[in-house]
Image (tube, rainbow, N blue to C red):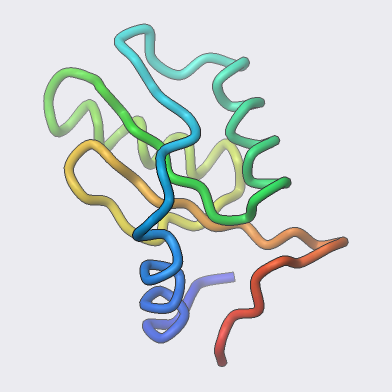
Length: 98
């Protein structure tokens, strides 16, 4: 489900004060890292990820791959930090505006 501009603004406002939960290092994206992000999205719905990798193209590719592999929506990306959202289908914690 693509997010509207209003929903993105709402999620950016909530995510601003949050700290990164998942850290991507030079080793890149492995199955364990994807599983950890998947679990964090299931628990929190809105998760910050810090990607400490080489250049911008590599970082952009990793951020897009994480969104694809977890089924999450990329809300915002600033520098090394990306904000992901995935609604919990059984127990939604965040009510998005229309």
